[in-house]
Picture (cartoon, rainbow, N blue to C red):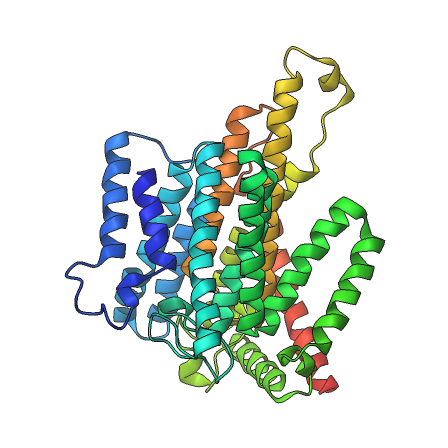
Length: 431
């Protein structure tokens, strides 16, 4: 199952099946075949599904997608939604159950990073020659892009920034007389340069957030804030779209107006929204914000489910990163000896890496309509896999259950919706 899921991951990111020259030449849908073979391997393995709140929430989220179009009068629309999103759900379940050891998790991170680097190298060639080996030209004459789901420079940059923390972690493992460390630092630098070539402002802000959180944890808030402000000043001085980063700028205003229209859709249809995929049928632009998109299209029901899914992902990784052994545990050398401490230190480092990648996605998602993209759910699969692995290894890591927080989530989602509306109103006034 695991090898086939790595093949599937390669096909999702590098996407040779979407190359213009190969379209029609490949007789089989490679991505779907790899996923199907992985599913068959899982059935034959007899492995049980990991227990995590995200499992039920993702199934309910897909059901809410289908109901959102049905209650808006298009009952038949539930079929294409199921057809399109069911493979994403299946990939999530298979990946999080195939990645049940730390070594497999590191391999999955390496595949993520190496595939993203292929796209970054394509972008470097594209920036130099105007066209990459896929035949894709520069977007808007200056911004690199790829094929398929990464044909938008913003999506491409989001992939790069998600992978940067993984590459940095893999570099810290050392080995090969320092060559492995050098290799992964080169990979990380290539991804950062790829982010610059996408000229995506949201992605640059996400990269700053990643380094800010890293410095905050390792050097303190003052150092992180000072260096972050300095980096932002430098980026604003570089010849890029960062120089246009202000509310009154045309592209930013288009986003704010779209957010306002999305919030109006939510006010008119607060329970189920206007229906999955109907946003651009009502307004000429997409939402450019994942929160606004799910609020508008799926109402408070879909928004609550998505917020819970994301919230548990963050909560899982934060709980591992923040946990510290008690004095009694430190004195118990039999159950908390040096080997356990070393293993826990590595598990906590992996949790911090996944937390940084989640944070990178969250920042990008605030400026992009990426509620339903497969990359998010593949990343979430690694999060759930790691938390499940840690729970099996350490008895002091508690299980997270939806029933323990069932009443809190509706209040949090309602507060988040109100906060988003206030933010939009403030930005309109500022503009």
